[in-house]
Image (cartoon, rainbow, N blue to C red):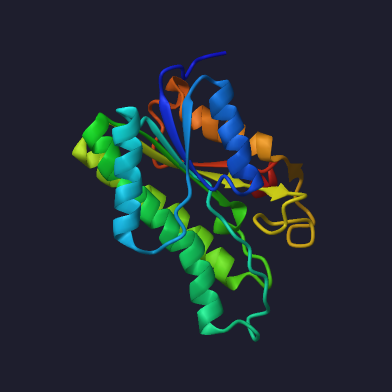
Length: 219
């Protein structure tokens, strides 16, 4: 199946299970995948990384940001540095990726941005104050970017996937001890949700939050 043949997908977060699954899903759909690893809050590095990806491949059609982490500490044990470190690893990196994705897609003719976060953008969990705040920040910055791009009529769709409970990757996504009532989903399930938002079937969907959580948020 080559429904994305000839398209270029920049994917961040390939070091975690969801990012790896997204790389596999987009590759299987025929896209040329460009893994991007940027571990810095230096804007110049983000700008250069996206510019190099676009120059090397002539275009960028999709930007998938699956960067994530999961620090678990009681609020009484959580220092300001802990909180801001976790928030920046998720929230700030997502915002920087989104900023330079928008600027790149405007130059190359439009496209799709999908930010992958967790259902903790919508429901809270104990010992996860920083993660919950960062996940909510990712969701709301996604919606804000979608509105800006729609207003500019620059043919850029921006949406978010909210991943549910994923077993086997506790360093990056909520596990059973955090969301014991939630059905289990796989990284591949999440990646297929991301892939859907990148296809023509989602062409008129922007600013949406797509839960891939087995119905957890519906309860």
